[in-house]
Image (cartoon, rainbow, N blue to C red; front, top):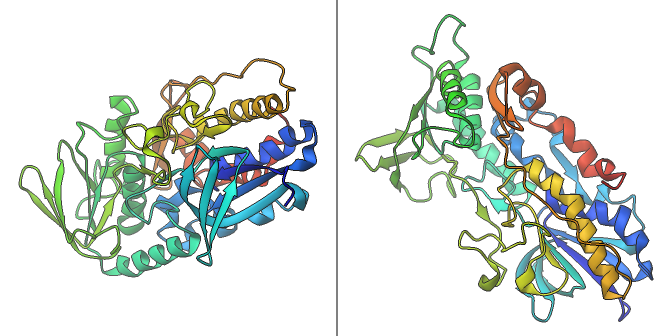
Length: 410
């Protein structure tokens, strides 16, 4: 490789990383002087992108969602660009030295590769406590977890899900309808469900991002598919300790702070996510493990020039795909400014990001119901189904993974 090569390394192959790579290749690299010197290098633990929000339904059966839309090859999506401008590495970032501007990667075959970067984007996302609910490693590991779970379902009589956020509630709704069916419209709850499904939350209500009336409506829908909600209940112990995490189909006993014990044939922890930032120096991290990121420019100011973070691993905004997508043009415009400035060509001011903090969240509950709001406006159940509940966003991801969503600068 030429000594004047300028590698733009993007760590993470999900919404943030893939979108950033497409946008840079389409709209930023062509504008740079000596553009042949630049290469975008996308690094991901998986060579397939997947629609993580679809996991609550997809984990039940391959028949629930079209697999060709659920999983998409990352290398194939980038075949449209000249080979000299793009490289994909299936590997994991293990160490970042931001002072000498070097990142170490452990590749699929176990080898270590070190890259001296000209610019770096940290878009490594976050891991879920349950391997059923996210692409924590690669697709093979996720599918293996789903297979183990599916094999256990026919003999399951009791399921406990801990977590009252969207992942926990959507999982409960999908499993409830799949295993128990749905009560008639005149019946407020399903009597004698085939499988007892319990959601436990430490909060005073489920779905804390949404207004209380929507949370109450969600409980009503859950009751109709045989799901019981226990609120104000903090979990103090799970036995065995690795139930639901390493051992997907292990029976478990969940002890609550009150002393009450719940026995489960299947236990699913859905208590938020953990940022994938263990390779980042702690001086660059917030107390919650996310990268300390400028909320307006998406730069990691403490790390030095041309280092950025976006997505669930970054602190600029709360987690949310819609917030990631609105930040992509801001991030890439500022990367363009910084790359031009590095060769003495910069013009124009920074583009500034402002998080949309209006109530926006959609939570399907089974195949036909759901609650949600968009930009502060309550959505009827039918619209939640139409927008998200039909296929958990798969109708949107094709253009995103292929880069068509970023065909024009925005």
